[in-house]
Image 1 (cartoon, helix red, strand yellow):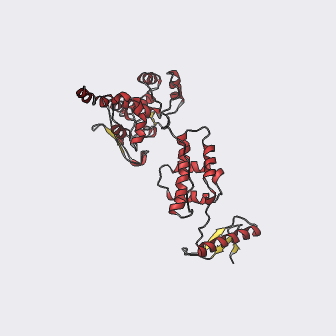
Image 2 (tube, helix red, strand yellow):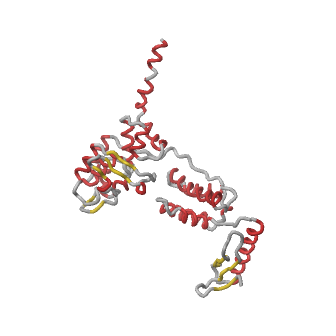
Amino acid sequence: MTLYKRKDSGFWWVKLPAIKGELKPFYQSTGTANKRQAQKLHDKLKTERWEQDQLGVKPRKTWDEAAERFLSETTHKRTQAWDKSMLRWFHPYLGGKALDEINRALLDEVKAKRSKGVAPATVNRYMALVRAILRKACNDWEWLDRVPKVGMLRDKGGRIRALTKEEFARLLEQLPEHLRDMAVFSVATGLRQSNVTKLQWRQISLERRHLWVAAEDHKNGKAHAVPLNEAAMQVLQKRQGDHLTHVFTYEGNPIVQVNTKAWRAALKRAGIEDFRWHDLRHTFATWHRQAGTPTHELQRLGGWKTLEMVERYAHVAPEGLQIAASRLDNLFAVTK
């Protein structure tokens, strides 16, 4: 009997013989207790499997199946929680749709909805996930014959907000001691917020003046060695002995959040607007470029994955190219 009921389920179930490439019979719940509806699904599945077995027709898979398989194959990703969050957002628009129904027009419509009130870079991250899943479905799983075009928005490099030396000094005057130390350390090292809040003494060698961020804790997926300048060393020496394991603590407990009422109040008192904690990293990069640090050195200091990501800061110090431009002066002098 190919349509039956199980003792542990109130729904009708389908059982069909194995086809090419399968070792066991096919079992699936119909998701309904209505026998007439269950029979319709049974007949549909039976026809699809016969076409797949005898005619080589690819099984018609849904977006939900593709998303589920993608997540099962990417459990190693450090950003999987973010992928799940994005997929939940996509569900009202793509959920339940067959993969071959997802075309450029639909994707453009979804992209337009996601674009409301968010930066182009955020939209592109969402659409890049859709593209990755569709490419898997086509190239790896052979569920699709072709991948529809997934349009991206023009991204001008993202938001860059850095403090001047005077603004930073004003901010430090207003911050409580624990946040002041963290802010100085962040600008001195360029470390991301999570790497600062989670920093432990076992990662640091004061004698060798460097710290180490493991690959699994670093955004670009590679281990990151950070040389410690004098400003960073002073913060560490000041906090040494405060806590057994963590560097930055407040009232004896490791700090886990920096976007606090105290942080926001300090910004307001200092007269600084449109500034986030992550902008301390932009400040680190901007000050380095203004000081003449070359792109390849800044990339290593800040742990950026590509040179292109560092080039966003090139415009802040055009005078750094003055020496290079002047190298032709002697040659022009010869022609006079």
